[in-house]
Length: 610
Ligand SMILES: Nc1ncnc2c1ncn2[C@@H]1O[C@H](COP(=O)(O)OP(=O)(O)OP(=O)(O)O)[C@@H](O)[C@H]1O
Image (tube, rainbow, N blue to C red):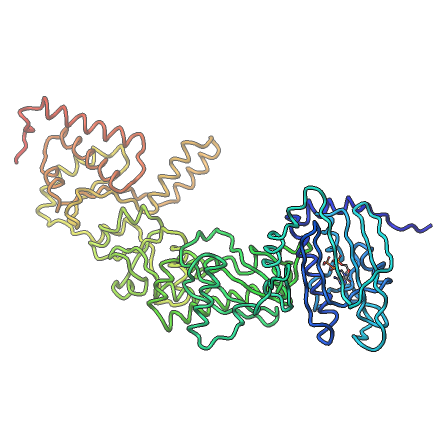
């Protein structure tokens, strides 16, 4: 035996209010939307197309001069949950309508226990599908439908002359304020101010000239001023620029306002979206590609679909193509700006460079813009990469800010141009450059190669320093580094600690081996053998007075203390991590020198020739 489902309306309403809609305020949106759809269904030949909302007397009434319903339709459409006249025979949402799910009217139960609909069909023959239009015969009689939150409904004859519908809500105790005049005014304005119909609340017009970006203006400057004012009113900022948006497949038009202040790239871009001129929501996500965080948009789309809650866009293929098209539009705007107004482009980049860099990771045009216009930190000061390549024959980059700080002065002084690739995206951008232009290749700096640019001492000086060098080497032997003496700028730097990349790798391996268990320790040990055994270097600068003074010491003990002091200083200056052995050496050096100063033979070292 076949049975029909029974529906407990209270359960459904509870579901809607708790899980579908974010707020009971949506009741007004749903009523407004039904009224607009009814006007659309009646067509332009019908009445003027007006919706009047009335508050007062403790009730809310929404009057429309739309298509209305016959008694049969009332039973079929109003009293059947999930049934909608706005779908075609195959169940697809009909293009012209805002509604489609057949549940919107139920949202009235979020604020009222009873919904009353008095309606008279505009179609003489009746039938929502029977497109007989107005005129030609008497319209069917008016009916009153009353639906109750407990699931009952009644239908009876009613008095009404003109075709159309009036929906009445009597707030349930506790919901009265949601139906108060000022709230209703605000909601109607927010949802409906761009609608292409005449909408009034208590006689006050809500709709005006439609979307501001489509309004006619005598010239572009005045249009821009009007849109700036619109942006201030909506978002409270003066836009850096206004970009017109259009995606015909999605029936989309609108504007993107470029933010005048930087925003975190992680901030979710939220946009004001209208569907068929009715507000979907003020903070719709997913309309633009993620990188486009530097704009706030207002758009109206005829073809994009809402989710059932009607507070977000339904993620489908059309939304995806729309997102791509909007991204492309923003990209073109930037490329054009670069071509026509470099000064403004620079201003834009100063604000939103993180977003632009993120774009450059995937987009060659953006990469070229970054190369040409965005300043990077370099050993010759802030400069674009293109400019930097012009000035330096074989420029290098490093991948961390610390490394840059450590090496830029030394490297720059040797004529080896260095770019800081340590900030977000910078290394990837630098490495991607060669992909679009082989001439734009930058090599990664291996710090150990810097010594090849340092000046060597003349053979006589070198020979004279041999005993010192041997003692100095003994002083840092246990710390695992090699001492060399070179002549380099900046002269203010007494000593430089340089680790080649392989030396750094080796140090990390050694540390890992100490921490690892036996098996791993063996594996790591075997790997380690495969790596070049070049050690970090402590390069003493012969141009520096302190270093020079130290190289002139002769006593083994004093040399040890002084060289370990220079070693510690070089580590600290280069912001290298200090191992316990390094800290110990530094302390020992201080203490030893102190001892020497207090108790050493009259402040002179035996054999000190100076
Ligand atoms: N003001 C109105 N004038 C004429 N018909 C209406 C009116 N309000 C509702 N209806 C009819 O009742 C049906 C159900 O309305 P309801 O709001 O529940 O769903 P819907 O608008 O079809 O879809 P959605 O759930 O997406 O809003 C509509 O399809 C429409 O045929």
